[in-house]
Image (tube, rainbow, N blue to C red):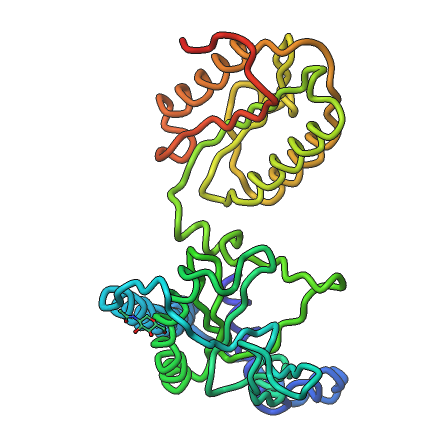
Length: 337
Ligand SMILES: *[C@@H]1O[C@H](CO)[C@@H](O)[C@H](O)[C@H]1NC(C)=O
């Protein structure tokens, strides 16, 4: 297989040098047949070459990220929090807008944008990054303003990184205060209701960097009192929790009333990897839950502890943090023990 793969890849390489992009697609096989030839190659050398190349590429990206991290840490270290700080930044939702009098609103100054092939032909600003703040976060909160002010230092690093490595595309910085700095700067398009729901803190890259791997048992109360809106909120809550989990995490969902019910009976007594398939599977099953009976939390709580204990003893699961998420409208029993 290795031999064939190497011969094939050499042919491909020759073809792609001769005919680039769409040209290649248009060529019929018979047109290129005369230039195809068999060459013996050492598969191991080829694999080594590829891996060296990949290592070099990833190494460059890592250096770029390190430069950003160092600069962000320095800026934060030397900054003293100023509760009355006034600071006008480029807000990607507001840039290039004017009010009735023809003036730019706060945070909405002129921000030159130009179409750029390297960035999916989007209109971008190659000299400045700008800031996105989700609609449900106050964009002039002092914590946000101070943190945005700090991260201005990243602008030069973004530009420098791109000069050093032209294969870089988007560079960004996600803050725990909720803003998202993106380079090159763009105009952010809200959804059809004018809402920018994107919150960098919910993205997998953010969560995986900000948290450690974890085992989570989600316990949801499906007793009669959870009927209606409460159940809707509970389901939404579970979906949101599931969305924060990634491939390093392990999870199970238990519904309880006067009895325990694993939403997926096949996963009884165990934890499963919170990969996309499993998460979507859980979401679908949770959506089908119906309320019934009276809540008895004790058994379900014991079961959850048992799952977590066993995972730890057997060296399964994340082997890191463990938690139980309890979703209920109130615990009626005495559950101190
Ligand atoms: C805090 O910010 C305000 C407004 O930007 C400024 O006038 C003031 O001097 C700053 N205070 C300190 C201690 O830097």
